[in-house]
Length: 400
Ligand SMILES: *Cc1c(COP(=O)(O)O)cnc(C)c1O
Image (cartoon, rainbow, N blue to C red; front, side, top):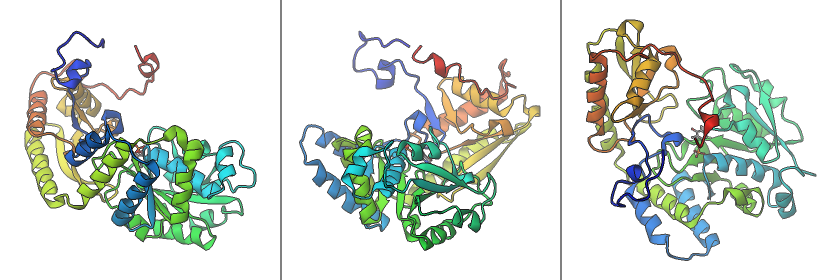
């Protein structure tokens, strides 16, 4: 869509840029801009924008805040959780050896390079974890099979060349048959191997460090409501080594002063957030949506707890053919409507999707409820029964 540069600048920013005014009923999705930023972060970012700082000192301040919130010894700020995972792998490989840091990723002379993870934990969040390992110059070693991993499959795959283990906590991993974090940590630690936890979308900032992780990585822009950034918390020597990657592969994943102060403000706001009040509001939203869909043939709803035990419930909507919709057809109709409503449709091929209440502005829950009721009570659009598309054709035409 063309940007109309003659438009009055007092139009809302999405209109100025020719963007659709979407409502996000899908949760914390990077592809939709992650989260509503908390006011504390916005204020801090605006305040630092025109000031100079000594970046090492700013990052030292961030380390103290990360340590306080996570219970870890130290922390650094990365460009995102994805960036934090790459730099954590690099840190485990190089330690504080400055020449080794400059030589990554292709020259790994003298370094341990293998990084072990359970096969069912090789999640993708844009890129996959095995590519994150390779970006740092490491070699992924996948233990077990897609749906099962036994202790010996990790223990016996660890060699003198193993730099780290990675453990993924995510709805997108296989949720059964894998080792628990304490089991994985016990095996790795018995062989002197540090464990990096990908906890990008997790609420609990303390649990993984408490369960023995040497590094835990979180997104700054998911539940924390900070700017695009990553929180890397952990053992001081590894955190220092991760920070030192700014002299190497980390430089291209640099995070600026505005993101660092925004993240610090978001972390401090998290400490005093009214979690119970937010939960109560979200529960009411889910009930409103459930009522909007109640009594429609072929559409069933149920409250669905989060699969990694985050304290957020969603409304699962099961769509049967007798509704006149496929799940994908209903998801697409919502996204194509006025206003466009984006939902969690990644399991539409199984006849279901989820509505997530955690990123709504005032009034949007009611709009979503009204649109749901309208769509299921009116004539079905032509593509109501469409099957999910898996084409990359649109992507490959970008920017057209
Ligand atoms: C979102 C996510 C990531 C990527 O996080 P970013 O901060 O957006 O880079 C990595 N791992 C998991 C499990 C995620 O949910």
